[in-house]
Length: 147
Image (cartoon, rainbow, N blue to C red; front, side, top):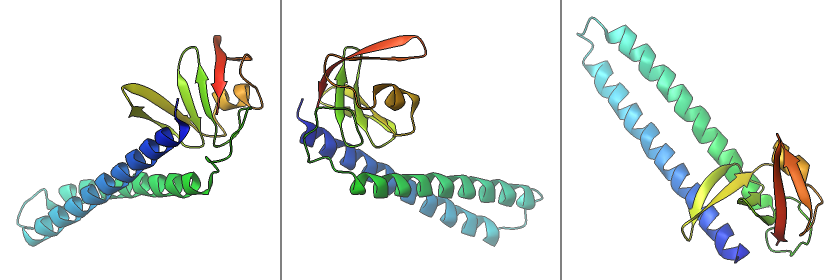
């Protein structure tokens, strides 16, 4: 698998998620402003609280995505590695993992599973090499390639 193309696809996916979250927050703020202008409704306070809660949730999600992007940009995906560590692409008999960012994304018709360095699967695979096995919750993953 071409690690650099996968990293580029992951970065693109993360940026798209950030853009979408930013657009969603902007639309919600605009809707809240329109709702504030039309405060004749009996349910105005209830709707306002619901919007505030939704805005807070969206902001938390956006903050998480920004932190993920910052971490992603600090990782070294360029250096080749023969063992599982942050920045590694790990191909197993069951799925492919990119270590350093949480969340799944598609690349070339395949799902790549992003995992953080605090994920149990990472702990099980850490420092292992091609040919090794890692077990998590009764699932055994045979490592075929580390890049």
